[in-house]
Length: 236
Image 1 (cartoon, helix red, strand yellow):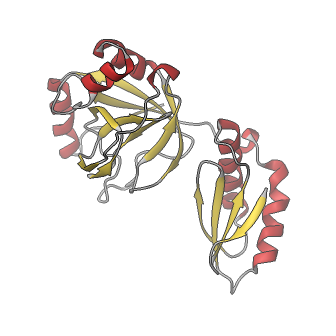
Image 2 (cartoon, helix red, strand yellow):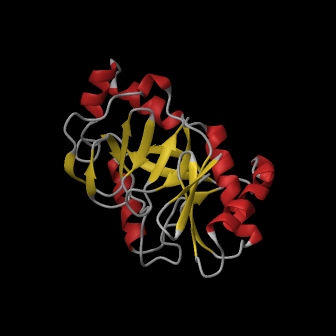
C-alpha cells in the first residue's frame, strides 16, 4: 500500500495496480474498518477498484497521524471483517428494441444469437466494486468472458436511466440519463437512484447482482409499481 495526498482534505490509500476481486475486497474491508472504528477526523470514505479515498478534517487529525491509523488497520482488512453481501435481483427487459437498442448489433459483433447473448448475460452473477460516475451507477464485474466487447467507438450523448450495458469486462446500469459508451442490451424498470426515497441509492459496494429477463408487459407493470412506490426490490 502507498498513501498519496489528495489536496489538503483527503488521502488516497492505494492497494495495488491490478483490478481484481481480491484487491477490491481489501479496499471495502478497510473502508468498513475505518467506519467501524470511527477514526478521528474522518469525514467520508470513497472506494474505487483498487484504492480508498479518505476525506478528513485537518483540524481534528494530521495527515501523518491518519496514515498511521489506517496502516494499523491493514492486517485486519480481509473478507473476515465484512458483513454478508446482499444479492439484488434486477428485472431487465431485453426483447424490446426500444429498450435494448444495442442487443442485435452487440450479438452480431460477438458472433452470438440475441437469445444466447441474453442467456449468458442473465445467467451471470455480478459484483459491485464501487458506485461512481453518476449517483447510484454501479461498476460491476463478473461478466462471462464470451461477452467481453470493446466500448462503442462513439459514445452516445444520452443514455436513458435504467439502461443495462456492457463494455470491456464490465457491466453497468445507468442510474440517470447521461452520456455513455456501453452497448445497451436492455433496461430495468427499477430506479438505481431515487433522491426522494429513504435510501436514494439502491446498490452498495460489495453487493452481488443478478438480472432476471422479463418481457415488455412485465416491464411496464413493474415500472408502474415503481412510480407508485409499491414495488419492493428482491434483495436476499
